[in-house]
Each structure stands twice: as C-alpha cells, then as structure tokens.
Amino acid sequence: MSVGSVLAIVSQKGGVGKTTTAVNLGAAFARRGMRTLIVDADPQGAVRYGAALKKGHATLGFTEYLAGTRPLRDIILPTALPWLRVMLVGGVSDAADQDEFLARVANGDLVTELLDAARSRCEIVVVDTPPGLGPITKAVLARSERVLIPLQCEPLALQTTPQILRAIQAVVETNPSLTFDGIVLTMYESGNAACERTAAYVREHMPPNLVLDIVVPRSVAVADAFAAGQPVVLRDPADPAAQAYVNIATLLAQRMSA
Image 1 (cartoon, rainbow, N blue to C red):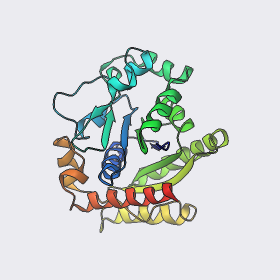
Image 2: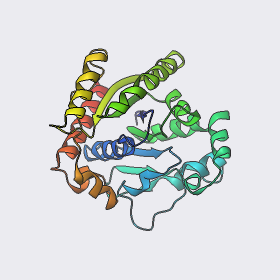
Image 3: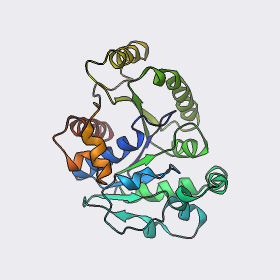
Image 4: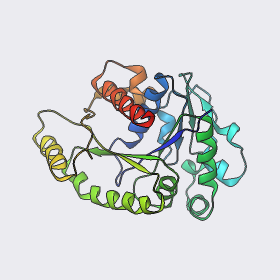
C-alpha cells in the first residue's frame, strides 16, 4: 500500500471553522473511497462532537498514545463511513493542566512516529490542530505534507493571517516537503458588506492562487449537523456548505494525485 499524505488544518485564531473544515474534508475524502483518518490534536477535543462516531465510542486517543499507555490500534475509532476512522485527542480535553501533554508533544518524536504510522495505513490523514502557533501545531506541521488555512470572512481575521503565513514559511525551511494548499474562506455571507469586503481584501492582497476559489458559505445546516454528531457532508449533502467541502476535497485529492 502506498504511503498517504498528512494534511494539517491550522489557524491563528479559534472560531473560524477549523474543526468543521477538518471533519467535513475527512468525511468528503472518505466518501470518495479514500482511506481517511481524522486526528484530533486540539486539546479542546471538538472533533468527537461532529465526526459521525458510533455511539458508546471510547474516549482514549492522542493523549494516551503520547503517554505510552495505548498503542495506535486501540485509539483508531470507526465511524458511520466505511473509509473514515477517527483518533480523538483523549484525556487532555478533560484535564485542567495541559502542561504534561504539551511537554510530550514538544520534547519527543512521538508525534512524528504517530503520523508516520497513521499515513502508512491511510491515503490521507487530516489533523485538526489547536488555534495559534504553539508546540502542537509546529510539531504537526513539521511532519505534514500539506497545510490548509480556514479563514473566516470577518475583518478581525485579517489581522491574524500574516502571523500564520510567516509560521508556515518558517516550517517550510525545515520541512521542504510541506505544500501550502492555500486559504479557504469560511462562513461567507453573500450580501453582507463587511464579509464581502474582507473576501475582496484577502484576494487582492494575497499572492495569486493563494486563496481557493471555493468558499464555504455560512449555513445553519453546519451547526445542525454538528449538534447531531455528524459532518454536514453526510447529514445534508445538498447544503451549499456541504457541497463546498466536497468540492475542496475533490480539488485537494486531484492535487495529491498529480
């Protein structure tokens, strides 16, 4: 079996649709018949609420692997989609003190070992990282082949984008195999003047081809799907946001096979 790619979903700030993007791209890849694993590396642990996990699933995951208390086979969970598996972040999401978890990420090679093992089993590993440029995000980017930035269509998002772009450029200097797939505009509202100005500004001031032509519209169906514990591409595939994620997954899959 060929070795797969690791796709990191990163953002400088929270609330931009990062986890929603990771979950729905993972589901969209799986619906294409690609062996897909979603890895939740964000201590907030939001992936478990929207990834179509089966009821009564285990809550162990990334934390326990880093601690050496569980092997990979014990923390890869099945979902409602045959080709989709999920690794939760594990116990750190319920811990008051995350210092030990962060130290394990920053000071060892376990993240590299985990992602190498995961990509040997899958065609695509989608990693949901925490907001910002901390040790988890840096460790994941150091072992990723691809990176995508969700950017909410709001003026505040413009202030944080240069920081994450500089960070990715710094990672590329040590990980030349990292490909920047671009920025995807999320929560887009046609007719909203501030939203449209933000989108126009991003496209005008970013280098050519850095911003995906496909935008993810704001949609009630996305929130409803997360509340139901499912990706919107599975629960409501006709919804415009679901169709956008399917189209992005198609674009990325084509790039990976090129």
